[in-house]
Image (cartoon, rainbow, N blue to C red; front, side, top):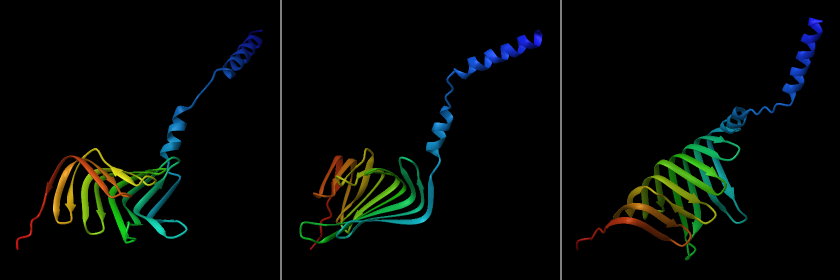
Length: 176
Protein backbone atom coordinates (compact mmCIF):
# COMPACT_ATOMS: atom_id res chain seq x y z
CA UNK A 1 0.00 0.00 0.00
CA UNK A 2 2.80 2.42 0.85
CA UNK A 3 4.54 1.69 -2.44
CA UNK A 4 1.31 2.40 -4.38
CA UNK A 5 0.92 5.71 -2.55
CA UNK A 6 4.56 6.62 -3.22
CA UNK A 7 4.21 5.84 -6.97
CA UNK A 8 0.94 7.81 -7.12
CA UNK A 9 2.59 10.88 -5.48
CA UNK A 10 5.51 10.69 -7.91
CA UNK A 11 3.03 10.47 -10.81
CA UNK A 12 1.11 13.53 -9.58
CA UNK A 13 4.33 15.44 -9.01
CA UNK A 14 5.61 14.64 -12.52
CA UNK A 15 2.29 15.67 -14.13
CA UNK A 16 2.25 18.90 -12.10
CA UNK A 17 5.89 19.72 -12.97
CA UNK A 18 5.20 19.13 -16.67
CA UNK A 19 2.94 22.22 -16.80
CA UNK A 20 5.32 24.58 -14.97
CA UNK A 21 6.88 26.95 -17.57
CA UNK A 22 10.66 26.97 -17.59
CA UNK A 23 12.63 29.63 -19.45
CA UNK A 24 16.39 29.67 -19.84
CA UNK A 25 17.39 33.34 -20.19
CA UNK A 26 21.11 32.68 -19.93
CA UNK A 27 21.09 30.68 -23.14
CA UNK A 28 19.53 33.58 -25.10
CA UNK A 29 22.06 36.09 -23.79
CA UNK A 30 25.04 33.84 -24.38
CA UNK A 31 24.11 33.21 -28.04
CA UNK A 32 24.48 36.93 -28.82
CA UNK A 33 27.88 37.08 -27.16
CA UNK A 34 29.36 34.28 -29.25
CA UNK A 35 30.91 35.36 -32.54
CA UNK A 36 29.58 33.40 -35.50
CA UNK A 37 32.72 34.01 -37.62
CA UNK A 38 36.16 35.42 -36.79
CA UNK A 39 38.64 36.81 -39.33
CA UNK A 40 42.26 37.81 -38.77
CA UNK A 41 44.05 40.39 -40.97
CA UNK A 42 41.02 40.86 -43.19
CA UNK A 43 40.18 43.19 -46.07
CA UNK A 44 36.58 43.68 -47.21
CA UNK A 45 35.60 45.47 -50.42
CA UNK A 46 32.26 47.05 -51.33
CA UNK A 47 31.63 47.17 -55.06
CA UNK A 48 28.89 48.81 -57.08
CA UNK A 49 28.25 48.72 -60.82
CA UNK A 50 30.75 51.45 -61.65
CA UNK A 51 33.56 51.25 -59.09
CA UNK A 52 34.86 50.12 -55.72
CA UNK A 53 33.67 52.67 -53.17
CA UNK A 54 34.57 51.21 -49.75
CA UNK A 55 37.47 49.20 -48.32
CA UNK A 56 37.62 47.98 -44.72
CA UNK A 57 40.88 46.66 -43.27
CA UNK A 58 41.10 45.16 -39.78
CA UNK A 59 43.48 43.10 -37.68
CA UNK A 60 40.60 41.10 -36.21
CA UNK A 61 36.91 40.96 -37.18
CA UNK A 62 34.20 39.33 -35.09
CA UNK A 63 30.85 38.82 -36.83
CA UNK A 64 27.87 38.49 -34.50
CA UNK A 65 24.17 38.06 -35.29
CA UNK A 66 23.39 41.78 -35.32
CA UNK A 67 26.78 43.52 -35.59
CA UNK A 68 30.38 43.31 -36.75
CA UNK A 69 33.20 44.30 -34.38
CA UNK A 70 36.58 45.17 -35.91
CA UNK A 71 39.81 45.77 -33.97
CA UNK A 72 42.62 48.04 -35.23
CA UNK A 73 40.78 48.83 -38.41
CA UNK A 74 40.36 51.41 -41.12
CA UNK A 75 37.56 52.41 -43.46
CA UNK A 76 38.55 53.86 -46.83
CA UNK A 77 35.82 55.68 -48.78
CA UNK A 78 36.27 56.60 -52.42
CA UNK A 79 34.04 59.18 -54.13
CA UNK A 80 34.12 62.08 -56.59
CA UNK A 81 33.53 65.78 -56.00
CA UNK A 82 31.56 68.25 -58.14
CA UNK A 83 34.51 68.62 -60.54
CA UNK A 84 34.69 64.84 -61.00
CA UNK A 85 37.97 64.71 -59.05
CA UNK A 86 38.53 61.59 -56.96
CA UNK A 87 38.34 62.06 -53.17
CA UNK A 88 39.55 59.56 -50.56
CA UNK A 89 38.30 59.61 -46.96
CA UNK A 90 40.16 57.42 -44.46
CA UNK A 91 38.95 56.61 -40.93
CA UNK A 92 41.29 54.76 -38.53
CA UNK A 93 40.19 53.46 -35.14
CA UNK A 94 41.04 50.95 -32.43
CA UNK A 95 37.48 49.54 -32.45
CA UNK A 96 34.87 49.75 -35.22
CA UNK A 97 31.32 48.51 -34.62
CA UNK A 98 29.09 48.12 -37.69
CA UNK A 99 25.33 47.68 -37.39
CA UNK A 100 23.62 47.89 -40.78
CA UNK A 101 24.60 51.22 -42.33
CA UNK A 102 25.87 52.66 -39.03
CA UNK A 103 29.57 52.60 -38.14
CA UNK A 104 30.78 53.50 -34.63
CA UNK A 105 34.48 54.30 -34.37
CA UNK A 106 35.92 54.24 -30.83
CA UNK A 107 39.29 55.10 -29.31
CA UNK A 108 42.08 56.89 -31.19
CA UNK A 109 39.90 57.81 -34.17
CA UNK A 110 41.73 59.55 -37.02
CA UNK A 111 39.86 60.98 -40.00
CA UNK A 112 41.64 62.28 -43.10
CA UNK A 113 40.31 63.59 -46.41
CA UNK A 114 43.00 63.57 -49.09
CA UNK A 115 45.73 65.91 -47.86
CA UNK A 116 43.70 68.86 -46.57
CA UNK A 117 41.64 67.67 -43.56
CA UNK A 118 42.81 65.56 -40.64
CA UNK A 119 40.88 65.17 -37.37
CA UNK A 120 41.61 63.24 -34.15
CA UNK A 121 38.96 62.25 -31.59
CA UNK A 122 37.90 59.29 -29.42
CA UNK A 123 34.50 58.71 -31.02
CA UNK A 124 32.95 59.10 -34.45
CA UNK A 125 29.58 57.90 -35.72
CA UNK A 126 29.27 57.43 -39.48
CA UNK A 127 26.18 56.58 -41.54
CA UNK A 128 27.18 55.07 -44.88
CA UNK A 129 23.79 55.75 -46.46
CA UNK A 130 23.56 59.48 -45.67
CA UNK A 131 27.39 59.91 -45.67
CA UNK A 132 27.28 61.93 -42.44
CA UNK A 133 29.86 61.59 -39.66
CA UNK A 134 29.37 63.12 -36.22
CA UNK A 135 30.53 62.78 -32.64
CA UNK A 136 29.79 63.98 -29.11
CA UNK A 137 33.37 64.32 -27.84
CA UNK A 138 36.09 66.95 -28.32
CA UNK A 139 38.27 66.80 -31.43
CA UNK A 140 41.33 68.50 -32.85
CA UNK A 141 42.98 68.52 -36.22
CA UNK A 142 44.11 70.45 -39.27
CA UNK A 143 42.26 72.04 -42.15
CA UNK A 144 44.89 72.67 -44.84
CA UNK A 145 47.69 74.17 -42.70
CA UNK A 146 45.33 75.66 -40.11
CA UNK A 147 44.69 74.25 -36.63
CA UNK A 148 41.13 73.49 -35.53
CA UNK A 149 39.63 72.08 -32.33
CA UNK A 150 36.15 71.92 -30.88
CA UNK A 151 33.32 69.69 -29.72
CA UNK A 152 30.49 67.79 -31.40
CA UNK A 153 31.71 67.76 -34.98
CA UNK A 154 29.28 67.22 -37.86
CA UNK A 155 30.74 66.26 -41.25
CA UNK A 156 28.58 65.96 -44.36
CA UNK A 157 30.90 64.05 -46.67
CA UNK A 158 28.52 64.33 -49.60
CA UNK A 159 28.03 68.13 -49.55
CA UNK A 160 31.40 69.05 -47.97
CA UNK A 161 29.88 70.76 -44.91
CA UNK A 162 31.56 70.82 -41.49
CA UNK A 163 29.97 72.15 -38.27
CA UNK A 164 31.14 72.16 -34.67
CA UNK A 165 30.34 73.56 -31.23
CA UNK A 166 32.91 75.62 -29.30
CA UNK A 167 35.21 75.63 -32.32
CA UNK A 168 38.65 77.22 -32.15
CA UNK A 169 40.30 77.86 -35.52
CA UNK A 170 43.85 79.19 -35.88
CA UNK A 171 44.73 80.48 -39.35
CA UNK A 172 48.38 80.26 -40.39
CA UNK A 173 49.35 83.46 -42.17
CA UNK A 174 52.25 83.25 -44.61
CA UNK A 175 54.82 86.03 -44.32
CA UNK A 176 55.96 87.51 -47.62
